[in-house]
Image (cartoon, rainbow, N blue to C red):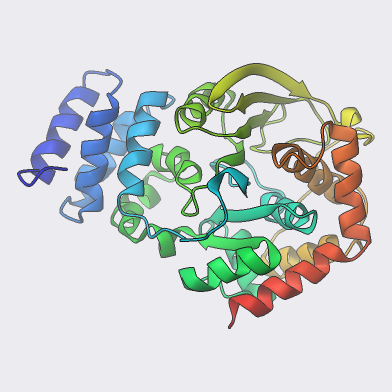
Length: 347
């Protein structure tokens, strides 16, 4: 950004282009995002811009421009662990939620000696991953130096969006007014504060898979899967086909599908019913992490953790990966790691 950058002028210029129903360039989005993140743009203008862009699925250029702008405001986790080894399991949101699958999967991966800097945000439901972890006793506002220690000692930390991307608060009211996924949903998971280059990214629409995969490739992802299930979830499904695009060492490798049977798991007739409140979410999280519960909920965790273990190069195929995930849970390692992470976060 140059010294003569004019936030309102840049924002208006981006709106003028978007009003013509033309996709924006990376620079146009980057300039508009920088204007928003400067705190100098009124909510009505931000809302107008986001609504215009929400008329189409974000392009890879639009997402990339937004990611670059957001990273310029991000507090980074200065770990000595190479970015090439760090994993994130954050999704875009915007799809129906059953339980906190991505965070449970992250803990399983860490229990299998992966290193996971899990991105997340406060949920519109009030019982998403951040609220559930806080309810379990984790300090989700832990400082970056504590997060560095957590990654080194237990291979897991939780990166709360408002902590690491504080300038994004300037768009909060506009996003709330829209009440549906916006460009910010696509950007967040791709701006990991620890620089993770291994990712599983669930998206709310199958049409969003390719643009997200292209951005992951452009940002040099070592290994990643972008997923969306045929039954409408932004994660792998235990009751239907899951569509995926694989990215390997900065290249989009193509489309694949995952079926529950590939993981050695019997397909369920329906998706898990999910949780209704924070108490339910916290209880289920603990029961699944400790291996007490069985059924569709546990299978959902296993197949999503399995794909993460493949991304982490801890397994070569879905079935063996799911086996590793199951062993980590039933041996008690996942629950033990959760307790360690909670303790470390509060130091």
